[in-house]
Length: 219
Image (tube, rainbow, N blue to C red; front, side, top):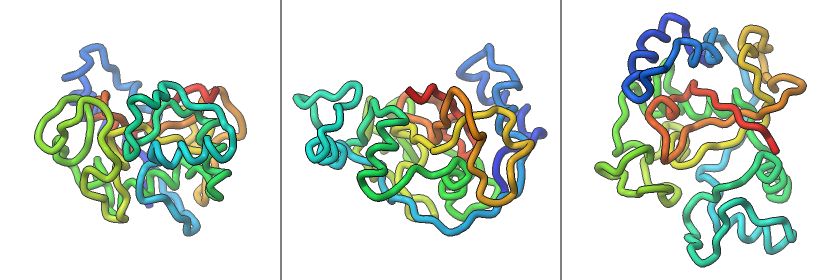
């Protein structure tokens, strides 16, 4: 599949971003370039985001610390767990007998078999597609939505865009695409931040694009 964004698309993306952030610059999108061909071995991915009830079982069976914002009085079983660091996500995945996806695997899965589209379902977006900033149409939640509240993409994956950001296994490097291996890229060998993908309930539509890359320190 083709991963990333072509440089010629940046002016259009910048124009859209300036509706939310007048100070936006073209450099904000350069970490998505160049678009490049990637080949991946087969892999599995969970259909849904990890829910509070799933994470609660992990905590109870392992004694692992509770995540940031964990509040049992407001516990909603079918909401996605939030406040989970990269290390927390890695620990949960290991306990569940799984692993975090690489950034390339995540983007391949998010595209759902579509080629060259902006979002997991196509080039247009509305609040009927995903949970992001605002409450309109099917998107009636002021924060997180229950997992699986919107239609799945072409690979049967729910909430791959919006609701909560999703951790990838990779270290983040804004220029990695220029030297990425063509098969099964694992990301840089070291770094200070990890990759987040998919956007969240508080963000704008730019963060929900399949090519969008966000970094966050892994602590």
